[in-house]
Image (cartoon, rainbow, N blue to C red; front, side, top):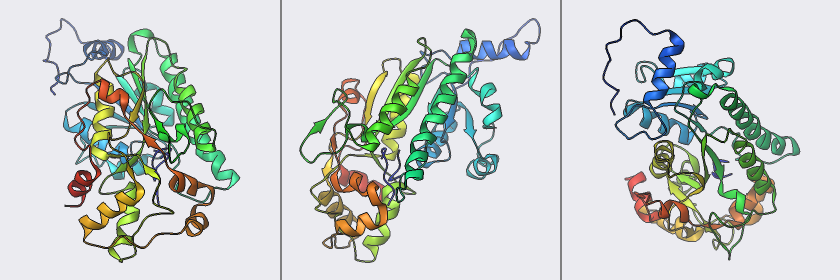
Length: 349
């Protein structure tokens, strides 16, 4: 099972009119002009230039598709050009720039904004080495992105950094309710999220930063549901552990829309929980999933079985947390899916 959050610790427009200029622009002048046109106060009618890490992941793929469909320029920052080219073939994504790490500097400089989604999934048994890599994969990429933004000349520095973090920041609890003002937990994933966020906040003070603490992302082609559906289809589905744990979820479309809004709307800054307004107990999620699939959901997966597969990582599922998107609601973000029943119906219909 992939766990998004720290659970993205995953459970895993139109272009400006052409201008008649007295002489051709140099490459550097053209880039400066492009950035000037796509300022931080972009309306949805203005083209943005967005660099994305983690673009081949579950959330990243859908975000790139959305940006490309709206005629924004997208730079895919990757460590594997061949993988990125297979996910975003040129015939389907003309104009997308795929940049391996030595080319990240040129891609970030001149971008309107950067979205940082990279990180090793936690859907595996945690050895000491895996735990180290889970943390370092996030810190290393975030540090690199921040360094490249900070080193850019003022006139070609991105205006906004939208950096993923996770609801794992809050730790786990069956009774507490968490929002953006809640303190951090004391477990391993909370520690990862604290360092992840503090690294992103080292970016230049002129850059607007939105830290999106992402919950369990529900979508058709990946994440938690991709692992759960086959179990239910074999009539073996049911709650994990007691079923009393809180499950803070968000539909894939809503998390992509939230990130998109954070890129273009200057009101979106600081910590924003990327969760739906109505978290559910895990037993309710399983009941709703079984109902939509026409399958029973009475057979629980015992704690010891989950721990045998995930080791320490099982605590994320077995304990959970109730996280509310207080800031997103204050900002007036229009959730498309506020209730898990509607989200599951839309995904599985």
